[in-house]
Amino acid sequence: MTDRRNTNRRSQAWFGAQGRSGMLYRSWMRNQGFGHEVFDGRPVIGIATSASELAPCNTHLTRVAEAVKRGVWQAGGLPLQFPTMATGETLMRPTAMLYRNLMAMEVEELIRANPLDGVVLLSGCDKTTPAMLMGAASVDLPAVMVTGGPMLNGKFRGQDVGSGTHVWKFEEDLKTGRMTEEECFFAEGCMARSNGHCMTMGTASTMACVAEALGMQLPGSAAWPAVDSRRMETAQAAGRRVVDMVEEDLRPSRILTREAFENAVRVNAAIGGSTNAVIHLTALAGRVGVELDLDDFDRLVREVPTLVNLMPSGTYLMEDFCYAGGLPAVMAELLGGGLLHGGPVTVTGRTVAENTDGAERFGSDVITPLDTPFQPAGTGIAVLRGNLCPDGAVLKQSAASPHLLTHRGPARVFDSPEAYHAVADDPDLDVDENTVIVIRNAGPKGYPGMPEVSNVPLPAKLLKAGVTDMVRVCDGRMSGTGYGTVVLHVAPEAAVGGPLALVRDGDPVVLDVPARTLRLDVDDAELERRKQEWTPPADQYTGGYTWLYTQHVEQADRGADFGFLRGGRGHEVPRDSH
Image (cartoon, rainbow, N blue to C red; front, side, top):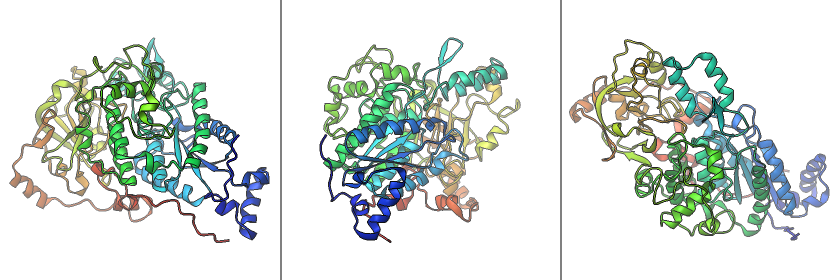
């Protein structure tokens, strides 16, 4: 084994210190049973884990951390595990997105404040992956992401069911009488039958793939199921690799380049990924000083077909995606078609092209070839502009209904998601299939936290009449497991005086996705008159983190990060107070 001792390492400012300071640092570490030899200058690797029983997607990460430790020891490093908060979308209120920035701050400060030379990031649920990447990028020490992997395919009545996606379907079936409460209760256990995150191409799976596409995760590791032994093999390999990265000084700033972000945007389109990737990639780019404009998410994907046939846009699930070749197979297809940059370096120390050389695609149903794609080019995320969203809005075309991509209809406005839910089952609700449901005050500041509420269920009376989709417009987000013709991330949001605050019942809303426009067919003079009458909502919070959030969160088109967290702050060793 290579001798990796180096007295100039960052960690040696702690463990190599002389006198009282060094004695304090080393002696307290030795109460865990470490011998003196582990403080000899070998790389100290932090293992940041978001394991928590309050974040069901992340509960198994404690076992994943043990596999990482094995790899670090094998490579001659010293592994030290530490906990982070877990922003689990499934339980947190009002929304996990409210706490993504807080988790990113915590990860950043924990890495900087401790005697670490490199770090392995263990994440699972939707917001934990981008939060960890954001925090690590701001510190810029060698880092490898290890996501926890998807659950096994759900099984119910002889068919595959997908987490999240089938929740929406079962809710519709319950409202229309096609399922009973007892059947839904039984289906819950069939849907989530192993450790891991959502096995649809929801946000968790999307961000795992995006981390791999960026070069921050080992090739192929995004797709292995959480309970597959190869998930642990991948984690052990990451532990070995991060020690080498410390030797090579391979940091996120060398990996997270403009070309890497362009690759991630195009991969997201090819896998039918979540619209939430727009928010998270924009925020991450801001941490490393890469210019990534909202319009890039439209421009870069117009030539990219959807290759992956997964729910919610398609039929299959992540377990099938893994066995069909996983993300390396997708990236190889895109590279072959000249749709990816092959040159960016990754955590392996090799380039994207080198990592995908020889990647195989097994079968043609789950990962389709570039010449006969699952959906044609131009079916990825569309970025809309217009007088209703001057700073942009997004729509996931692959999950929308083609006949609604051009639509004109009267608005039915609700000032909160709760206001809609209170009347959604009313048989006398004044809506029809042409109505455009407008949900406002669900943005970053207004809710607060920009929850996944935009794909509200259709009114019960329309579901019973056989209507399967309607145009919905909202300044909030949609779960990556969701589907429907839903315009999201409307910016500026209503709570800061965006045009969505000015919409009234009956106003004609015009959606034209091919033309990339969303507008309110109301003349400018009337909108200006309404704006003069509008008053901002009173601040709800006078202290605490939520106050900090509402005072400093940026709008959706800038990634909903805090303005004061944009850019990096480095890994300079803090002062020694001993």
